[in-house]
Image (cartoon, rainbow over all chains, first blue to last red):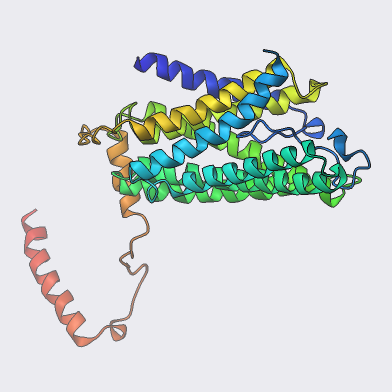
Amino acid sequence: MKTAIRTFAVALALTGAVASAHTRTTDVKPARATSIVPIPVCPPDDPNACGM
Amino acid sequence: MNAKSLIQLLEYVDPVLCLITIGALFRAKQVRAFFSLFLLLSTKVIADSVALLIFFLLARGVDKHVAYPIYFYTYWTAYALEAILSILVIYSIFKLAMEPLKGLQSLGLLVFRWAAAISIAVAIGMAFGPHMTSTKFIINAANQLQRTQSILTLCLLLFVCFAIRPMGLSHRSRIFGVSLGLGILSTVELVSSAWLTNMTTMYMTFSVVRGIAISMAFGIWAAYFFIPEPQRRMIVLPTTSPFLKWNQVSLALGHDPGYVVVGSSSPDLFAPAELEIMRRAAEKTVPVAALN
């Protein structure tokens, strides 16, 4: 059990590290980690209201 | 059930799970100990409720040009707030975990504060770029802050996971449960940042996996606060333990030091009483030195 938990924690950390290394800072479209609601990436005065 | 309907279902499940976790925090009388977590969950519930209300009003015919700016500012304010609150959660978890080892706790918190301050400064600095508008700056700064917080969280999870025994905790401890939930959220955030650059639609299988992972993290928190926590074990460390040694070293740090005279000093600088003490001490030392 202890080993399984440790393996899971290490897997999470490694996944995070790999994902972080693959993220190009200029291309990032951020998403709230704690939410699944759609991400408003357009400016607030967007004429199309970001396709809402 | 397709990806879109699953995501729409999860949009309602997440705030409900958050409310259940807040209820569990109150039931376990742990709001004070995990106050930053309580604030993080409350922020999420409020932000999600506003978002869902906006979508509800849109469906009822409210002008999207009025609704979108409200949604935009609510989302990004919540995003930045959640990043800051998550850092505070990590800080409080570390503080709670290191409670028995006061020396290491104070040293660790000092290092943590410096690391967090530098990370925030770097996040703000990296948000600057060519053709930067205020909207872009806010989004970039908040995003960098989230990534920094995610990396700090994963480091904390690894630390709690591997140093759990010397701290008298078990895998059923709430400290571990909160760290695990935060770790899952952080991994989701980092993977999302990498993955979303290739996304063409909001409703992909990845979004479903992401939604399930987020719900799982809230579920873990709720479960850990509903299940009674085992008592923290008495910590017995071997005398050779590096934890013990570093704790003693850290405890000694920061105390008011004693002072020694370096180099020559004139007897005029001392009070007569001090000279008398030194004379007597010298008298006691001379016979011992003579015997040796």
